[in-house]
Image: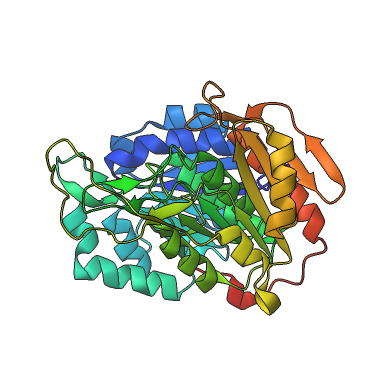
Amino acid sequence: MSSLAGKRILLIISGGIAAYKTLETIRRVRERGGAVRCILTKGGAQFVTPLSLAALSEDKVYGDLFSLTDESEMGHIRLSREADLAVVAPASADILAKMAQGRADDLATAALLATDKPVLVAPAMNSRMWEHAATQENMAVLKARGILSVGPNEGDMACGEFGFGRMAEPEEILGAIEAFFGRDAPLAGRHALVTSGPTFEAIDPVRFIGNRSSGRQGHAIALALARLGARTTLVSGPTGLSDPAGVETHRVESAQEMLAACEAALPCDVAVCAAAVSDWRAKEPHSRKMKKNGKTPPELVLTANPDILACLSATGNTRPRLVVGFAAETEKVVEHAQAKLAKKGCDWILANDVSQGSGTFGGAQNTIHLIDAHGVDSWPRMSKDDVAAKLGARIAKALAPAPAVKSENLKS
């Protein structure tokens, strides 16, 4: 069952072109069993219509603080108290300033001032407005009060500029909502460490040794564990993927950097090593681009990279309770993975076929054989998101029961 099943979201849409993204957010929340009720500001109504919001939410859309019918029942109080979470998306610079100042001059800000429920904001504005000292001070005030936030991202703006201020995508906002409700989920109180993507090992400033891993599986696992309530740390090699919502992400390039980031994240309850780490690196990378020297290729001397899976499996008192590795094979998939399980000292190995034509590297689907001390559990071919969800459920079962959640683990 989704962590949103039966949850009630009060969605406040303020003025900004990013308001169109809220339509997809509503659809995603409803798909997962959540209920959405909308407050549309006058600015927001310049970009989306009450009719479209009502059609997707299947509920009345509110907008007038002085509505005779709604306010006869103290509508701004009722709206603010009947929700489990209030989400402001897009959160313009104007509404963030009003929230910081405690103003209540329209229905949206009155409801936010009256609410006794948690609030999540998704800022969206021009990059100069976001970087302005006033906006940064307002955000600091709101975070100090416990307001949660997601984004903004860096990217192209509707105004033609580029920078931070682009509203988080609907999937990211959904992830943040699920992460909030996931604090009461099976992995609440647990810390999960996930590695993802390839590593790039420099030969010179231009060339590197790498592989074809897209990072899709590792990123999906990190998001699935966060949705189950785990405080999740993702250490990712170079990928073209966005950071999963609700996940603390550290970007690295080399295997040595990845190991250092993993060791810095310890202790944790579970480590899932999904990254395709390069086995070798150049022993002495060149500081300048190597130039062609006739027809003779330069000699490249390699040295072994650290074995991150083996290191995490042998970390003594800080060893995770559960260490999960991946075995990317092109032949004798199960046999080679069984040998790897014994050699690395981890608890589980997820073996998959990455041979040419399998579609695993860079693809959206995967075929998994989970190998542990009890044998082999072969899963049917499924999407990488479904693999992540299935693995997350199995991890939650293995780590149950979870300890009580401590307040210091809940970050705003």
